[in-house]
Length: 257
Image (cartoon, rainbow, N blue to C red):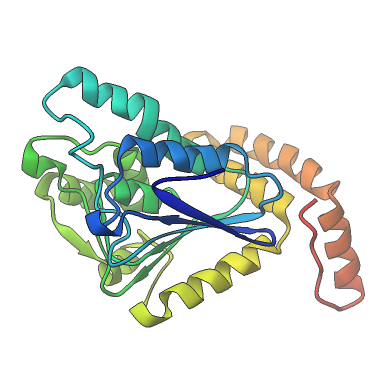
């Protein structure tokens, strides 16, 4: 499939999505959200997805030239039909998702970065919720993502004061997985993505679902979800291979099934 706002590359089980509007710091119009969602809608044999941005920025937020902020209906339509479905597709993906943040991650770009299972950022990167500066509220799932990742006080600070949070501060807060030197960003991100792409995909899928259940459910419900997931994972070929490899004292070779 041909895409106009993103680049999609496959390397075996690893799929890389590159936001490709570098002249706008990869500001996201509705079309880009649609294209990202389409990739996640049909992952095929993909076992991990890596997302990054072309040029000097990860994603500077929604493209305001393509999204009217003065119209209640237009803003609601853009979120409901374009941006929110894309974020939801990423978070519900049954494979690990890694974001390599190579510059500003603002607004919905911040949501995109934090929707991943692993977010790695270069030291020059930063995370920003600047909606309040133009009289708007955070969207794209930011309220949910930030409150759960860093707690009420820090989430309130980011959203009400509109402060930039450096990559190093984000790591210290537990907002992201890791902050690395800019020059090492893509090497580290690709290494992690490759490891996950060759891991026990069935187990990864249920770990993601269990974490989601743990964030929203009570302990008895989570215990039941874990038990059901363990039954499915335990019957997978990868679990059989993992057990055999353990007994034979060798590295397991997972196939993703």
